[in-house]
Length: 336
Image (cartoon, rainbow, N blue to C red; front, side):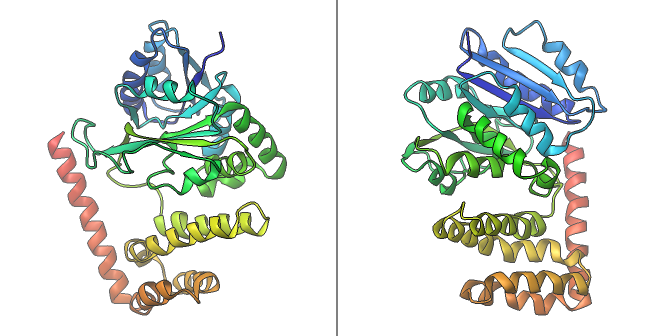
């Protein structure tokens, strides 16, 4: 029988976390129409041995291993291609499904057809039993007549909370790969943001937000991305391009604009200290081109650029954040 739900786990070099991920989800798949598919992006660690240890114990489990590392986008595209279910859930390899998650998704998926289902989540650092935030978004369920509007709901955007209608997602993926090479999406940490736009905006189906925080999202000790570059500059450039193409509406772009302007001051303080003056001025010129008429930008972010051009300010910020990282790593190792 075709599974109702495919839980796709793209993984790379995170064998330890993958065990926790599989331990959280596989026991929930017994005697329900669900498959769990692990796609190993040519990990050099013991990931194949971890997957093998679960093979045969759970009928729902399938696995694939790429011959080479396909990047974020390539492996995420494989998730959409290999899924056999009516719905495709993406579960990051360092996150978990809390008890009841699979049954909860199935209950919504079998209620009616949706273009997309979004899951609320809690966040944790060491253990999901001790969450940093018991829930990130609102606890109330909500249905959206325009499918893409769910992406503007608080907390929606974490990939482990994405559940796509398979038909909608596969059609959108086919269109995306005709337009651009998958490698172009690496700066956006993969293809899923683009897929959500291309899949949901043209869909006539509604979407649904599940307020119960069934995803446990791991907050890493140190993030492996630059929030100023990725969450502000790259993100707005991507949305700006989709708006120019006529895919995103003025209202959709305004939502992204508001989010970026809120993130920007903190991102400048956290990451711009590592820039030289030339790079800093390039960033400002790019932001001025987008936001120079925005009061929030002129009030909160523009004054920071004046301070950040001072070498001692950038040096001080680097010292503070490097010291913080060392202290946090020491604390983490001491508690393990």
